[in-house]
Length: 221
Length: 221
DNA sequence: CGATAGTTCCAAAGATCTGTGGAATAGTGT
DNA sequence: ACACTATTCCACAGATCTTTGGAACTATCG
Image (cartoon, rainbow over all chains, first blue to last red):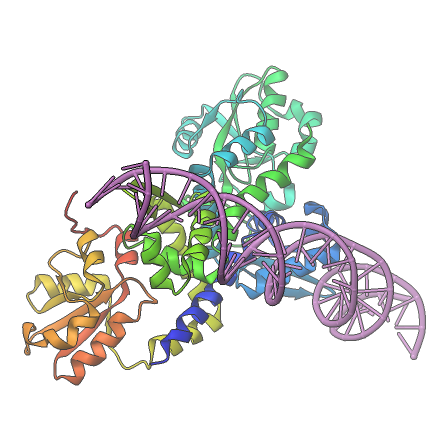
């Protein structure tokens, strides 16, 4: 049994998955791809990278089995390879936020002051089914179209200020976005409350919603 | 809002967790630490590394929040930081094995031919409670002592051949070890069957058993 | 208090990773 | 076939990671 050589080789291969998750820019890409399939140029712009670099990162993710591709004419669309990958990413975020104090500190800096009220998934469901609250999805509309929380309406963050009149002034508004570290929902709650609405936000986002096995609405399914 | 700089910083911090999982030797260390707390010298020997390198890897894991330490006299014992970390490692193995064909191939090379019968966790429980089978834990006895499947007996792999007389020749024997990629159980089944026993193995190991929420026996708990 | 065992710190060499322009490739539409 | 768009391949410079001996710490024990 020549296992003295085979075991390190096996673990080195598994480590490719870890390596793929070991770069901030790649995590930003995964963060987007968990929401919906994206083309390379879109990802490059969203992550603030040039296209060549983005392509290289995507190759890394692909070799690690985390994403897959489909050709659509001249563009190539990358998507998350399976639900197991989304679960892995979610678990990575969980570990990072619970085990690393620095992550928590950086998250607070990024998301802003702790001045917004958050509610749990169950609480959201409860308030919505009681007719107490309406749910607003502040992600880009393309992500809303890919999948969203049932009954949520789509008002992308960058349109929110100009579409305030569509919202009820006397009903609670629950906003949500991509995940725990998505800043849209924090910003949205601040904006809404500044305009006299009663807004709260889902504590995490649609990633965690999905991983918890909650139902989603999506066009084809 | 200067989030243009804060978001990359946040993801770069989270990526430390990925980086920590992005090295084969560190994964081998995590694989051991999931079983029980270990001292640095023990880990160095088990992973085939010199102590300095092992210490450096452990620092990396610690900074990523994956392991924690306790001092015990002059030795420092490393342990997995939380169940969430074990779950993350388990999910990493799941993704690697389901999404990367090369991992599967390397696993087959390492674990040997596909000549051993495997059974599921539920099947193990069924056969044991029906009195059909006995369960043998072939991990090192120290790991058995830390936690094991209820009713399992401990016969470490390197003692198995000399302790065959302790086993019932006419009853099914189910062996298990650390996890999916642990070779002990495969080798044990081959050895037992070669000596005329009827042996099968648990498809994965105690890591997956624990992550599935199955009960464990351990001295203090 | 000096000797010892276990661990970490330090510095340096070699390997690997990251980001970048420029060139190459693969479909689309004219 | 040609121009055009989206993506990937290539090569290189700069940064980061890995491994290793040797020195420095820290708790224990005689």
